[in-house]
Image (cartoon, rainbow, N blue to C red; front, top):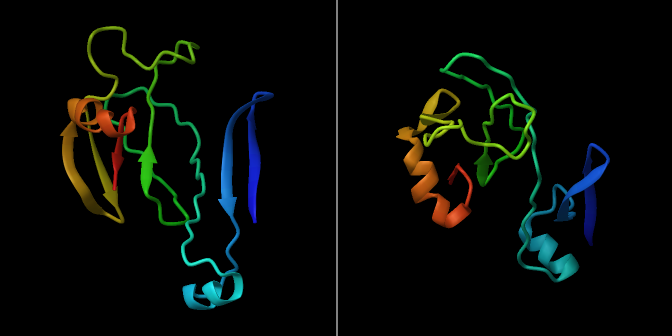
Amino acid sequence: MEKVQRLNGSGREFSRLRYSLVPLGIGPNKYTERWGISEYLIEQLQFTGAESFSNSAVKSKLSLNHPCKEIVWTVQPDSNDVTNFTDGSDGHTIEDAKLQLNGHDRFSTRAADYFNLVNFARKSIELMAF
């Protein structure tokens, strides 16, 4: 049941997505009896699109349709350099960040060093893992 789907951007392949189909409405016990599989995980890529901003305080609305195990964001200057994710000086493009889900703080405001140094060892990109 495993499938590989190619995701294309600008005419070139940039990622592969592996997933397994699990029929909806069948709980884990019936699923186990029918196919003999006791563990499954559905992973899905949800992309909210690119946003442009010019001021220093950015508030972005995420419309996520399903539960997620991690949220990844990137910020880069508008210089048409797709590999540049720095601000040009020795600073960070993100000074600090806070995530709110349904109006509630998921975590308090954290400095860029938290995302670069603490989470970097685990994920190697600025993100907040749940």
